[in-house]
Length: 341
Image 1: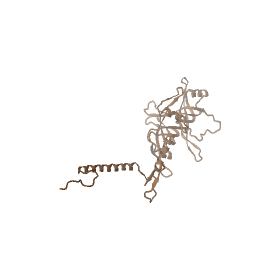
Image 2: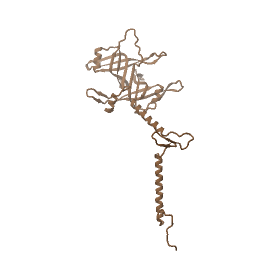
Image 3: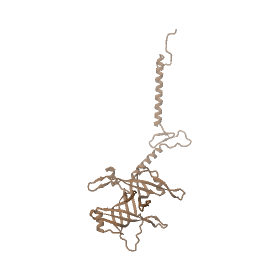
Image 4: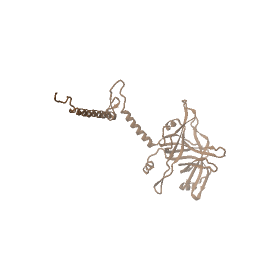
């Protein structure tokens, strides 16, 4: 990404962040590395994706553990406030996705780590509900480019209209460059890669036409899954983003709108003549005459006219040569005069 594009991105008003993740949950297994001023812990997040008939969210049975890694000033803040097993926290920051291998296994695991810009301990009054309201406790916003064409697949069940239910799977690469405050220069980093899935019908239909390399933006939640490794007591871990809000990014949407406007203008120049009227003349918005739904003296007509002139000129040249051989001037219709024998 160029310096100019980076500055434009940082200065423009953004509806969706390039990379931000938000979680709420309880702290588990805090590990303090005081010598290097860093701390790591897990946040146990309860997945809240469904609602009952009254619109109340129903927690899923399974829970997710999200890794949090704190350094620098945020480390000093947490040391001062104190953070312990079981504390309920709200964390907002930058998401990271990576891979690692467990000891004794050749399987690759995926993980999701948050580098927080904000960590808040939440205190609840005794007897008051701690139910999450109007948000997902593990939400994420991303902007990036598709790493492959979206893959649409069938899932179990039918829609209310009797159609086969479908899902879509796509890969996204997110720019991970950052600006060093000390040097005021951008630091190049490898992009982040993650998988995104959606089972929302409207989203599936919309995303299916997208292409590799196109810039998109999305809102969703991070899901973690574990699969047992056959023949061992270990599991393989997977991370993906589930979303029902996937769109082209703002700049791509503007380009597509401009392209659509140009196509509309082109269509207006080729309006069909009224039924039953031959030789109907129309005029487009530029004032050029259009006859029989075709532009007068268009490129094809001009080329044809030029060919006709060239052909006529060639015939005249041939006629001159033939008449010259017969001993009469070119263009003369009378026979040459001579002595009558």
